[in-house]
Image 1 (cartoon, helix red, strand yellow):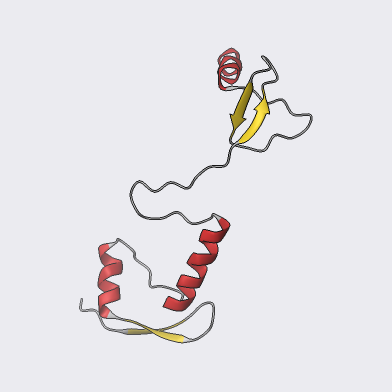
Image 2: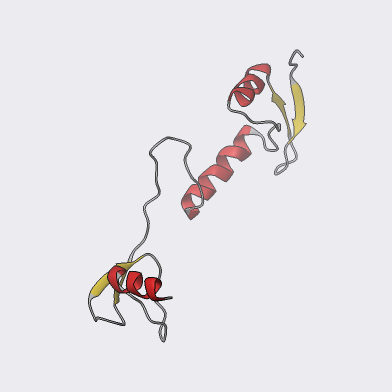
Length: 106
């Protein structure tokens, strides 16, 4: 099957853009099966918005978004610890050792 340029209507802005043969080959090489829904400008805008909101994962190997950590005091032993979620009042928080201990006894 030979590839041909396609004219596609952008999902976001409604403008038309050309999905070139080279782009189609690149999409196929990456394993993508669907054509893009957004024009290149809208794709970049969406990507930038997702990066700024922390919702975008890079496809570069070894990339990992930095996690936020919050200080807390363990409800069992009283040790200071850092947890990957924001502790809420009235909810116990455990250090790694105490959490593992409660997991084993369940």
